[in-house]
Image 1 (cartoon, one colour):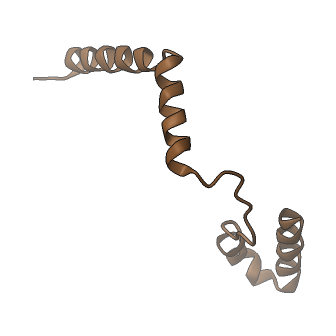
Image 2 (cartoon, one colour):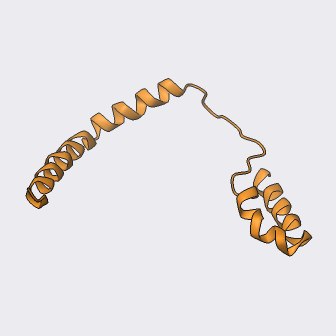
Length: 79
């Protein structure tokens, strides 16, 4: 519903004046009319995401990428 209201608001703003067309992207792109929060436990979500990061093995890919990037930086730098 909120997305449709934003689209209607944007179309009304665009139809008002051609000069507003230049300014309206900065006015309406970040417009948020309403927000519905499903799970307000932010710290629990962060802990669950971190545990998933560890359990899925992504931490190893991250560490290997850091090491390879450090080696590559050392080989490609001058001096």
